[in-house]
Amino acid sequence: MGLLGLLFKDPVTFVLLVPLLLYSVIAHEVAHGWVASWFGDKTAKYAGRLSLNPKDHLDPIGTLAIFLVGFGWAKPVPVDYLSLRSRRAMISVSLAGCLVNIIIATLAIFLLQFTFIRTNQWLGVIFVITARINITLGALNLIPIPPLDGYRVLSEFLPVDFKYRLMRLEPYGFFIIIGLLWLGILGPVISFVYNLILGLIGILLSFTGR
Image (cartoon, rainbow, N blue to C red; front, side, top):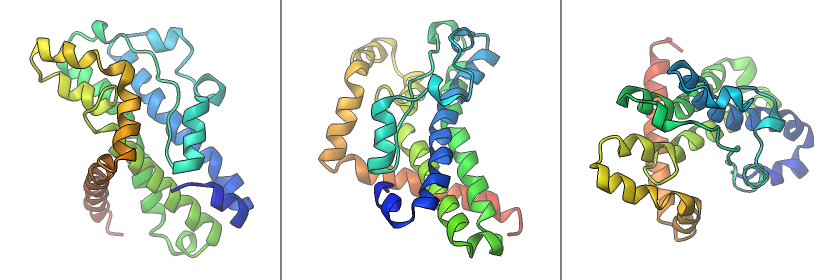
């Protein structure tokens, strides 16, 4: 869902919403760095990338994509995956960003259960789009295509020779993703994962009684 239409339709909501969306993207990357640091890789810390300051993270094209298509990316937080010696560490670092996005979406959907938020025009729009953006970010990154997070998880279970063959595709990964989106191949996959995440959030929230 693009945001440019919202700028002209409701500029006040747009101004309120943009920081939330940008920080959702930033939080995804910072989560990778924090978990990597917890497992002993201080690369992101020494690079000053554990900050939530937007200037340390924003990628011009990724930021533009947020406004045009409703999701985007920040500059990847540097992680020395070779220093993560256990499979558990690799998988935890890889899934950290998606998990943070799912947590943000869960909180947004939870807050939408309250009538005063759901019935408020500005708050309702803010939390609905925040949830959608974060679920989409999580769904996209779980797809096992280099350099997405799902690929890094999958690669831990692949034979070493096949893993290194896929690594050669990593510099071209975003072009592959854009091509698959343009051909309409990736859209249904993202929708499928999106619905799985939404279903999981529904199950989690069912325990809250709301």
